[in-house]
Image (cartoon, rainbow over all chains, first blue to last red; front, side, top):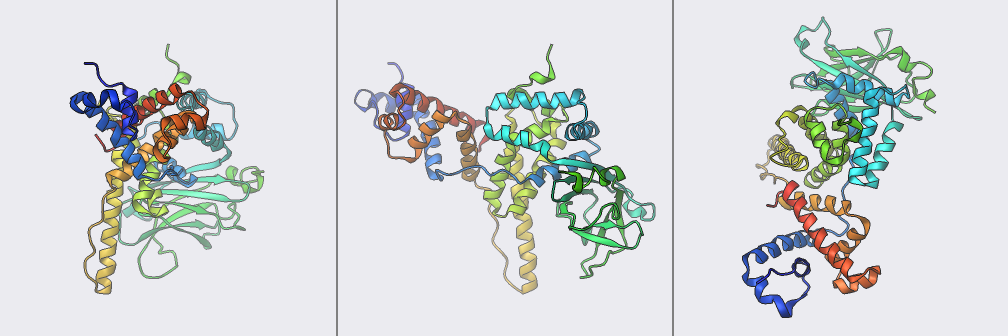
Length: 255
Length: 186
């Protein structure tokens, strides 16, 4: 005897009584058809157990920034350097190199493959974010206990704000890591905030702060003592390039 | 000769596993919402879900050598990493809760739940449902969530009966295959 029509099995899984008259016996006794019906019924039950409006949430944009910063800082990712150059090249609108073309091609392939309008929207929106600088943060000779620490800072600018994404590679220690902007006078400093448990953080540069004056990024280890002052233990530090901060690089020019 | 600008959806896992510098961005475009949604449903808090999402993709990139295309899909591999990271986050939350309770002189807190298999599977299902072509997706939404029979669905949507039947059969199979590949159900 031939197996039950797959369409009828699918409709049965949905609870319809399709083909009941002529086929009930077979679908109940044939192990193959029973198993197939059970497979499909499981899908239907799962779907109905959920919410018709069940939809996927897109992670907010800073999540990708943090991933990119963390991967860019990873010495194990041999291609990290090439990656960030390619990305900057695209974002800054410089002539595209082979890798940049590769990215566009890969993206096009993915879009065609998926055919997802959401994917298209996100991919085409991505370059609107201007990454104006990505720098390495390095330990200071004065603090040899941190000689293994590394980090990256990635700076994004939009028309209205500047965002700095910091990633630190350092062991967990009692206390917490805090990110600072240091002034050129070596005295003034502004706290941007704390790094999370994954040793990363996304910070908005406070309005009115000119990064040409506060061009150095510093990460400190702060004890849990309630003090809001820099603990005077710098883990890593780096300077934002002047080219990214001057006219044409900062938020003021991102129009 | 294979050219980089002809990489298809199926080749993205390959580009990923040999470390193409842009593959991670593409994998994130494709699976970021899936990973984030599982974390968000399991943990409730956006900040925790963001941290887990970050950890999943950074960890996936660093251990991409261990991804074996012959043994499973990239989506399934990422879902497994997500479940582990969510479980870690729940354990960490429990530990913090215990410390707080000890400080407050309270009793021990109950063990947190790992992300339930149903949560993961429902999100994988929602992801695949969203990827169906529009008319197939509509047919399935009506089939799952309305009381309409397939004949009534055909009338409502103005589609031939045969088209509705074939949409139902093919879509249900496709959803099942995706669940078997990337979900927890087997």
